[in-house]
Length: 107
Length: 116
Image (cartoon, rainbow over all chains, first blue to last red; front, side, top):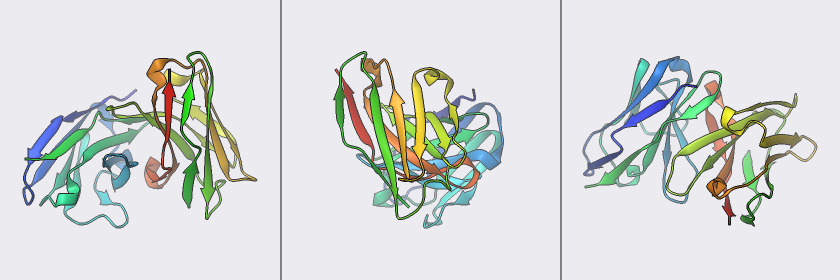
């Protein structure tokens, strides 16, 4: 089973700043099957990015994904107030697994 | 498609849990349906999935033998049964349809389960 490790655990930033979130896999993962989700308190997760770099429907272009192999990144170019949330990466090979999450909090 | 899950439950240790997930505004048979849970203050954990059209299931190794996922295409409803409950199974349980490239694109509202 592929283990995804996200870092940092918490990111403290101000609105307008750039956020860079990391997701590292325990073995090489096809970028085709790497996704990112956003979750706010009391809500279900929302799909942001699929195929490592493609934005899901309705996702603003300040969200971007990149990476390949074992290292993937989610970047939020300029944080808006509604972007403060927890972010998860997810992969699929023979099973679906999630990373432990990165919380982006207001500094 | 919207996914509407059954309501919150309180269960005794050793008992079984059955959560339903009904697709409204569309058919469930077309999409693979996954179950994901989230313990309090913790991350997301995939439990398994079903292809309702073919009845094919796949389970996470951790839950093999304890979870059963079924679907009734005539009512567009999927079910997740988890047996031998323990306190560590206290969590919010979500159903979610599978979209492009093995992603989870439409989620239910979640069902809170307390084992105590």
